[in-house]
Length: 170
Image 1 (cartoon, rainbow, N blue to C red):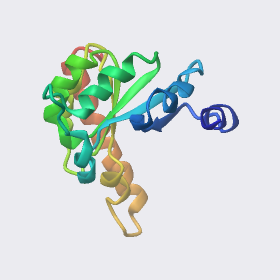
Image 2 (cartoon, rainbow, N blue to C red):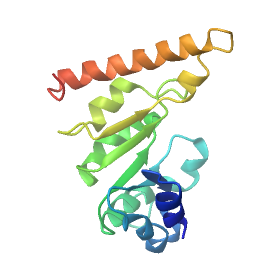
Image 3 (tube, helix red, strand yellow):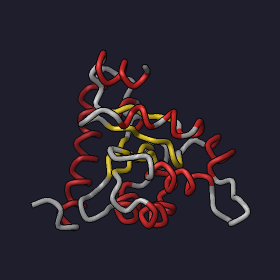
């Protein structure tokens, strides 16, 4: 019913879901054509490390198990990977080479767009980069809209340049 509400009643294009209750908490979101389930994998928040880096007897981290298992559920799956974990993107791309990655945390949280692109970009780009705080908190003065627009354009221009350098944009 959650999936139906978000995708039919509210006509959302995607919903972020937590995979830790198993397939029955993710699969209902995969039954809608043209809609996406964005599954939490390796987040930027410090508390996420309480569980996401937990290693099993095979020395595999929990977020790696999530990436592997959730891909068996179906299509239209993206994964959340925080920009502050850019060094892990190289390994993540080995596990999920073709999935889109929603990458929050560029800017105010300390994530580097350059590192995200270097380690996370695939042959189709495969990244949805988000910089919320870096934009919405760019100014608390009367010039907020102007400064927020400028920060947005700066990020867009940087990403466009990286896409051109990777021959993904003309």
